[in-house]
Image (cartoon, rainbow, N blue to C red; front, top):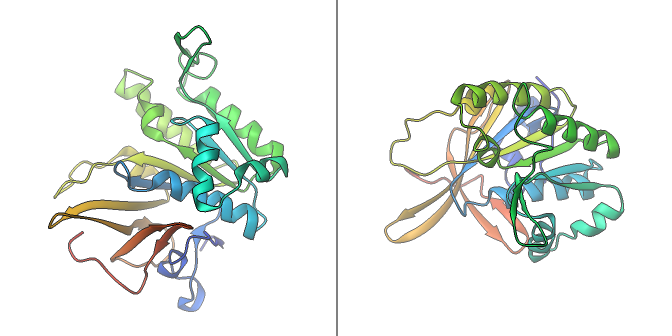
Length: 254
């Protein structure tokens, strides 16, 4: 069994069993895929994972932003009391702007060619950038938000699969516990299985579903290699302090 790290997310570690059935945590240094639909809390989950790591467990982190700007991320985190700017100044956090396009001062949309396109293997430049940033602060936690934005930069499905395989292999070797967020739309019977689900050591799901006219949040551990874990779907909420999972309760037919 790999060493387990505390996530800092209330209720989550209690769903993963360590030695002697005691609360465990995520396997250290492995890739974790976080699936969820729009508004399910994927970015919040990732930021909370990094913030708690930096403030409670002395584990610096890197957030790779592919959707929002670093400034938007910092401002949004304040609603939960997370001062990311302070952590950046202390060398405990880095936010990497890896958005595939940007807007010039003249108002033109331009691609970020220094990171995307033209590589022999997709994502190779991004992996090098991430590796450099991880080394810079001795990061132990990494969040890449999100895989969908990354894969949409390429037309060839084969090229994307090849790059995804290489990306996860590379991230598994840099010494960080890595969280990869990925969009997943809720369906009654989800038949599509993503390549990332096969490759990742851990797959977590944030459900955000409508039931009898009410939106319900729930959390599920779909896969966790090498450790016993809860097989149930548990209620989850987003409070003013971040995500809270209720391990002693369960959601039926989520």
